[in-house]
Image 1 (cartoon, rainbow, N blue to C red):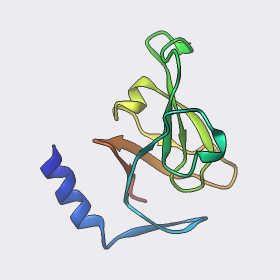
Image 2: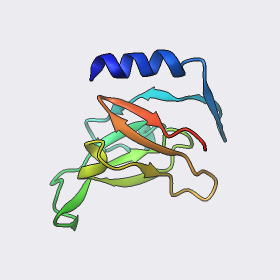
Image 3: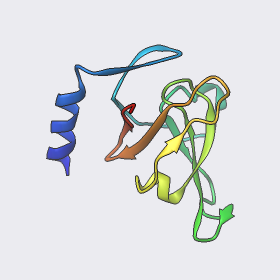
Image 4: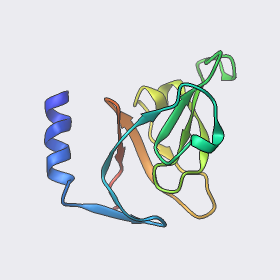
Amino acid sequence: MHTILALTRAIVNSNSMVGNRGVIPMIADLNFLDEWIPEQMEPGTMFLLDGAGELGKAENPYWAVLACPACGALGLITRQQCAGLEAMICGSEVCSAEYFLADGYICYRPPN
């Protein structure tokens, strides 16, 4: 899996998407915050919830808070999204970035 991700990263490094923060790479590092300090939630930062799995649907509970890698808007993500099994779409009024998590990276879904 790491080889595939490395190859994908090499291929898309020359490509980019244009967001409201300018040009953003197709793959970005995922950053983690150990303590809930909202002011430190920069784009692409994740905070795992205390008591993860206690909120939301029993089969796919909320697991973390993720700052959109394009605009920085905060949103709850589920266990399946955290595991990279489901893609995410930013819920901000000014952004519609689509992305998913894979091996500690944020991978943007390419535009159609």
